[in-house]
Structure formats: structure tokens, C-alpha cells
Length: 104
Image 1 (spheres, helix red, strand yellow):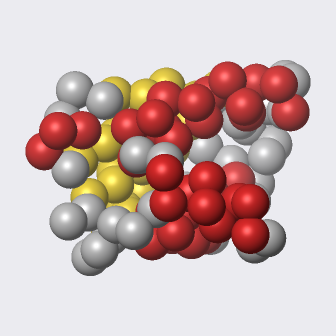
Image 2 (tube, one colour; image 1 turned 45 degrees about the vertical axis):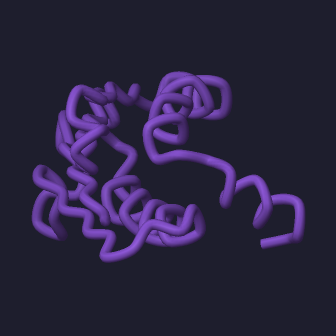
Image 3 (spheres, helix red, strand yellow; image 1 turned 180 degrees about the horizontal axis):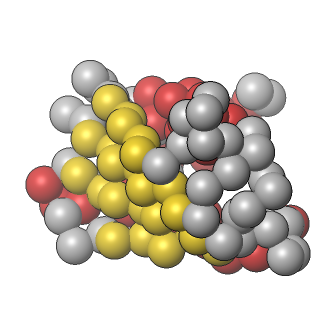
């Protein structure tokens, strides 16, 4: 991560970061599913995000976990946890994947 991105991530909030994810994804990955974000509990340090319609995009479930595992600590969030349901090695291309983010 370069200096500019490191500074940007320290100014970012989880709610803003997750709010922008669907739009960034849509711009860069046309035709490969969409993200839906529930920010209703962001003030309680909990965000849910659903990835829908990515059949055939086998690696997204685990790759997104890795990406977010890096991003939240870069924003200075402590005790960050992420869980997901829907993706597994046995079912790498589900219709929906639900991600849950919690932090302190």
C-alpha cells in the first residue's frame, strides 16, 4: 500500500467504505454479480453485505474475505471479524454470499 492509500484508509469509515463497494464493483466487474449493503447497524459496529448473482465467479467468496480483512485494520478498526455464509470449497459459486463485518 502506498502512502496516499494508507492516508486515505485512515480517513475512511467502514460505513463509507462499504457504501462505495457496490459502485466500485459495478464499474470494474460488469456482469459479475452485485453487492447489496445493509448499513442499518453501522453505528453499532456491524455491517452486512450480500453478493448476488456471481455464479461462475468461483473465487470471489474467499478473495473478498481477504480483501476486507486487510481493509478494516487499515482504517484503524480493532478486533475486526468477518464471517461469510454461502461460499465454501464444496460450493464455490453460489447464487448469494452473505458477509458480516464486526469491529471495535
